[in-house]
Image (cartoon, rainbow, N blue to C red; front, top):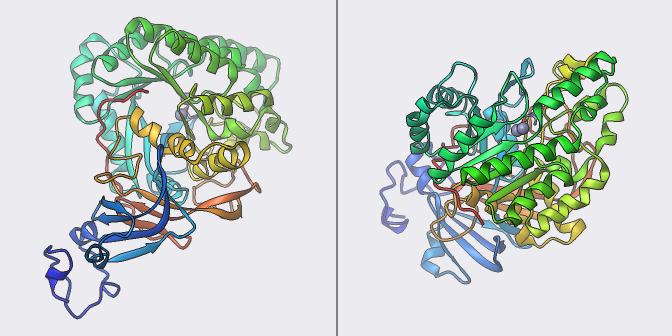
Length: 497
Ligand code: URP
Ligand code: ZN
Ligand code: ZN
């Protein structure tokens, strides 16, 4: 077959006697220019639900339709049959922490293992948090994160910049961060002495981010009052994992949310509350939005399924659920699902920040304050939201896609490159087997963590094939990509609903 019959492109290394199937090139240009046809699938986006074929030219979707012309179909180097499967945009997890130094140790997934785990779970973009450690400039912080992530990611990635110091003299540097495609900023109202900032800094960050078309994400708790409660528990020798939850009651989160929303209101800037875990905090967020403010938020998979009773597990196993904010009373679970359904909360992330039980969580064996805060989850989110949302609560497939992909693409400046299946969009696509029954377990997951938050849970639904910018990276239960496929995503202005 002569070159011209392919696509008219120069294909360089290909020899005319080779069939396409035989040809396994390693030349990156070739990889980008592969053509793929996904046929017979049911395409679900945040707004659409229809049967059609998708043609991918290189990294992007170039055609969608029923009965695509024969000459187009012939051009396909690879054909994927998606019969009886859902074809959805790759999921986006906008809240993860890979290789994060925290709590005297480092989160156990690096960018390689964490993004491979994500890919198995149908997630094709992540946003990590580049956290400004004491004495570092914004640029040094970003460079440090690039050094950890670059060349190691299986999927596309970006960072929110977590600011811990912001004086007026840093304004120019702030603008340069935006120029690099980092348009969202994070502040902590918790972890005093480590990451916590004061209200003056909060105001400055919100004002600068908002003025530049960006947005400020807030870990909202009353960190000072919580510290006093922790001290009192320690003094009273209440040191088991369950006291982590007692030291951070929902009302302290609600207090942080209310304060963040009020400061954002006077800064005339959008605000996004991360990891909302309880109804009281969600109500504060909703109150601000009802008053006309651009105030948004997320919850995380764990808060949609687990409650504070998990801290009572024997043999220190409660430590597996020590993350911040902690799990709360069961009565919060349905309101959070309702909040997602009605749009009080915009998306579901994971706050993936895994620490192994052996050797890491065990650091706090005798004192809950020494348990590193965080848990694994990046691999489970898409399927757990399908299970809990679509199967168990009748959410539409569109809503599922919105919560796991589209809403984040819009809110964090990536739409329509990411978050949908449309002509011109990146071909980040998941062929989802929505009938597959399986059991979640740390024995079979791909995250580098020796336990699962959902060990033994039986669910229905699994990503079968995952494409990242047109390249198949998960197929037949195997990772078939290379860990340098992922590119840094330059993001634009946020699009708020
Ligand atoms: O426990 C958690 N969530 N660890 C990660 C840091 C944070 O607060 O998001
Ligand atoms: Zn947080
Ligand atoms: Zn986090």
